[in-house]
Length: 259
Image 1 (cartoon, one colour):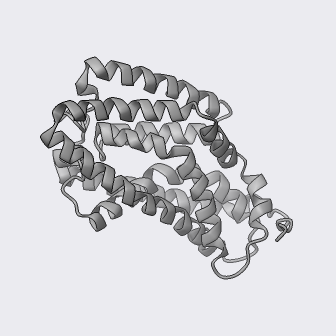
Image 2 (cartoon, one colour; image 1 turned 135 degrees about the vertical axis):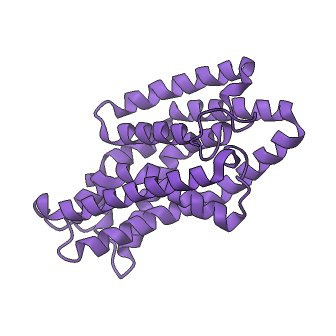
């Protein structure tokens, strides 16, 4: 099926309320994430944080809403301008599809978190190696061609609208959100692996990663910032070989968690 051209763009002001609502949701997710982190205390620093699969995925999705939704605002704004009516509901569908992708990513995240918790308790040396590997994987991926390709899609929502113009039916907004979420996951999954090393609910790390993701997608120098971050992560991997405390999620507690 060929893509049909998107509807003529409405004035920016008509999409502002829908995007403002998106940012309010993100702010609420941050507030809820802080509350959950405080309630967990240091349990949020290691493994699955003592949570079962369903609870872990719920908390993971909340975290992703807080960290990732601000970076979706440019795409949501442009998409809202192609919508003639019910903009809030249409954007809600996009957000639901987007978060569904990150919720699905919570399944392998749970498996990895469980593995790290198991390794930390039984094989400290292996846990140390796992921390080094987490930083190294994230750093290497930041410098890869696949990262660049996914980031290019995230930074060019106007081009994606040509593809989304072919979507029809009641689930079209969910499909748009899921499609964009897939590229976003491809762009950012390795950064989330860092949370395994530093603690899944390490608040400082969450803020830093959210800022980097937003910069990569919305800042003119975003791709350069991403590559600088990649080099820094590779250096951090090397440093962790001699300084295991740089991976607090695998080596006890660090005062980086909110109390």
